Length: 155
Length: 195
Length: 172
Image (cartoon, rainbow over all chains, first blue to last red; front, side, top):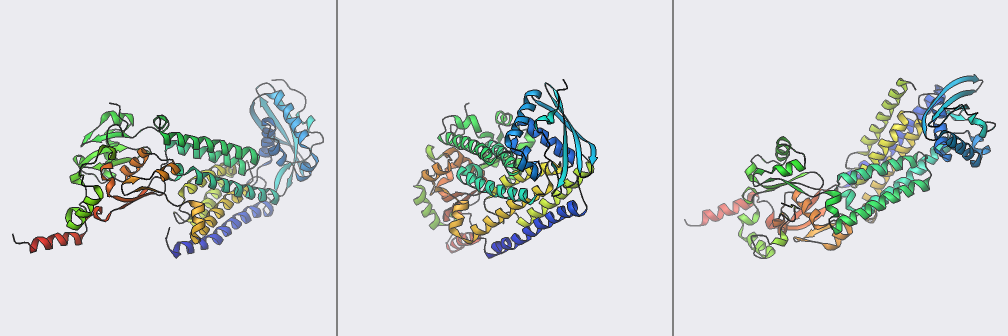
């Protein structure tokens, strides 16, 4: 207390400078993502998005899973559908051991990621389509969320 | 980089900041005062929860319940320590004497897992070059070493040099040169020694 | 995930946070270093998700940036307005006055006598010398600000002069 006008002055000057730094950093990232068409550096690569999505489903984090869908996907897919897939997955797999995703196909704008999930009870395979939206990879609305998991493959 | 998502993140950051400020203000000294190892752990726990809230992995409600529970537990804990019915010792330990009247106190050192080099190093940091100067050196609740010097090693006070000041001293201390038992902090029971 | 990606993101995150911290200043940012500390933990947590690309990097920028700007704003408001300061950061409580611990402040801060004694010992003051204290306050993170009575303050050169003068004037 009572450090004088100097301290306040320094603080007040710091505010716009800090704002500038934040905007600069955002600009840098935006430039890299939109300008240089970065799809794996400042933005999660599609494999990670697929993995995180499946992880969210396997843990029952409905909101989190939902946020990884495209805007249209979020609008068209209800929470119940996501929850059903999540419950289905959880009951089949039990505790989650490992998730691995890899790109299997590229059709125009859409990448298809085969995501292998290893649970303690069973293994499942999901094929997730992703497109770029706002520079990020998002999972498009699959025609049928419940069918995503595919037939049981056995442990 | 959906602007909606980014805006949401910013909004959550604001909400989290406000809540953390309130938590810190009402937790009182435990955060601004003596920061024990336990307080540090609690800060880490809160940090983890807050992280999940900001990135939206958990709903705000879930997150704030987490914060509330941790905060309340810590709050209750601090009340228990305050009332000091043995909880203080259980949860946060007691000050440990490591040096007394110039002699290293090995049981205390062992309790604090310090060897001679550690103690001497700390003493040097306190500007002590002669062990005999030290009346008692204690490892306090926050893990730091405190040094009480012998009377003759204390810096000269104004009262020692100026008569007018001496008078004032007599008035303020009520004429006792030796402290009464209730004034002592370094008596055995106060230091929590059992021996 | 590419190792190069991890390295580059880590580098950018580091530079970004460093810039924010340097701009915020050290103790200038806020007297409440408690909040500083918690924010440091939070931001540290936010960073790892960004480095491993679990979230878009922009999220880290927005999150850390918002927290920093808030901290600066709060600090400015607190410094400009005394009432706001009291609300936001709380006045440093007086724990000891004229050698006697103040019960109300102790209860409010939930500090018991042992802990006050501990804090004062850390300042080199044994209980025997509590009477010398005019006022003792807790400042940040365990540092206690002690105000001694005038007579208990260290002797200064003018005090020594006084003694010398008296001794000179006294016929031996």
